[in-house]
Image 1 (cartoon, protein in one colour):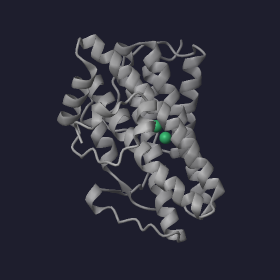
Image 2 (cartoon, rainbow, N blue to C red):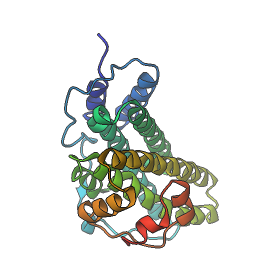
Image 3 (cartoon, rainbow, N blue to C red):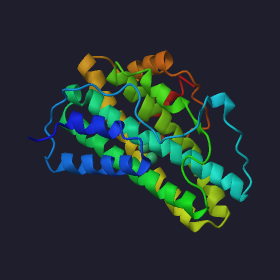
Length: 263
Ligand SMILES: [Fe+2]
Ligand SMILES: [Fe+2]
């Protein structure tokens, strides 16, 4: 019997070991593309995915401040925080496909499984970068708030799309260019290439979110901009902070008149 997509995705979410989760995400994306998973969404996604044993989670306000200088310690802290963002991003994309795939359809599922495979690749290259500096994922505490922002929208695909790809991932578009410039200026060519790759991919991820958000608002017969603004105010606790990377956001299908009004 063919495994169902929901079963495969649930198993990957419940995989705590980082390498094994990376492999599982990439395998599911490939299997889906090749028609090896039944398009059946028959089981629920877990409330909380599994993460590596011993990972220390801190509330956002207790995270140690990261220095901006180019010391090894600061670099490790920067790449470690990126590793965690990419790791959680694997689960966010898998959960999106597994939780809402049944109502949103095959294109949505394929898009978000492809995103999950990208995030798995991002995590793997960032982890390799950490290893080259003598560190590893889990050697520092991590931000506990990332999953919670998503969890809050578990009952509503439009709210999930509004908050995760279109606020959290879009925020990555705003902050990555400055980080990229600092790393380029420090002469770290390998690090520069990794961040450039991630930035390019993230523009696509925001675009995937924006595309399906428009579709979800059509299904509800609501104007997308207004619905997005309402859902962000309702479900996103943080602030939308300028400066915005307007050109990258626009390239991803997120026009300024959407977010400027919420900021
Ligand atoms: Fe990523
Ligand atoms: Fe992403």
